[in-house]
Structure formats: structure tokens, C-alpha cells
Length: 170
Image (cartoon, rainbow, N blue to C red; front, top):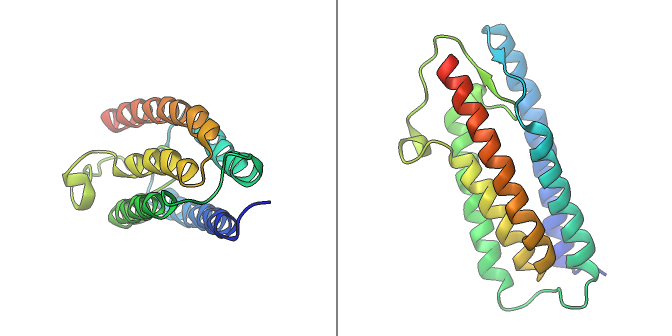
């Protein structure tokens, strides 16, 4: 049975993803009204697959595997996950209505180089990578971390290549 802490994290993670999709829909309307261009392929399906593995792995392995559970390592790793969320929302806030879960460009718009983007080009993806590693480890879901980490890295490398190509074309 999943621990109350794991259940709370799963509920927060699910609510966060739903809120991000709602924000994406709102931003998509703004982007469309300002002449944005959606690029395909954009690697979104593979990113969704990583999130499905994360959630399923946390539920199944984190909640039911005999080796999984909450321990002394849980709180420090959850603190790292929380810092990653702070980076994610700093990136989203910096992009404002230009943020989307899809690859979208605004023709003629300058590339954003303020906020976390002044330090490195894809801070949101650094947060996603951190989250995909530390959340399974926080609950002792080692197999999930072993499967999820390379899958997430593959998805993010692909997505970054697609984004960079789209930004170069814009």
C-alpha cells in the first residue's frame, strides 16, 4: 500500500500536470492570436510516455515493492524535487504566454535570455530531468529510476534538438 507521503506526492504531481495542461491551452490561444507556428514533430508523445512511466512506477514500485518506501533519504530528495519545481516555474513564468508543452515559435520574436535562460538555454528540461531521477529514488523505486532516467534523457535530447531547429527556423 502506498505511504500517505507517496500518495500526497502523486496527487500533487497529477494536479500539477493538469494545471500545466490548462495553462498550455490558455497560452495556445494567445500564441495563435499572435501568429505563432506549431512545429511537428515535437517529441511530445515521448515526453508524455516518460510522465506515464514516472507516475506508474511511483504507484506500482513505490507503493508495493518490498524494497521501496520512505526513509532517511526521502526528505532530502523531495527537497531537490521541490527545488526542481521552483526552477520549472521560474522558467514558465519567464516565458509567460510563450510557454507551451508543444514546440511553438513566434515569428520575429527574440529568443528569451532573461530569468533562468540567462544561465542555460533549457532550464525547464533540467527540472524535468532532476524530477525524473529524484522522485523515484525518494521512495526507493530503484527500478523505476533505472528505466525512467535514460528514457527521460532520450526524450529531452530529442526535444531540445527539435526546439533548437524550430528556433533556428524562426
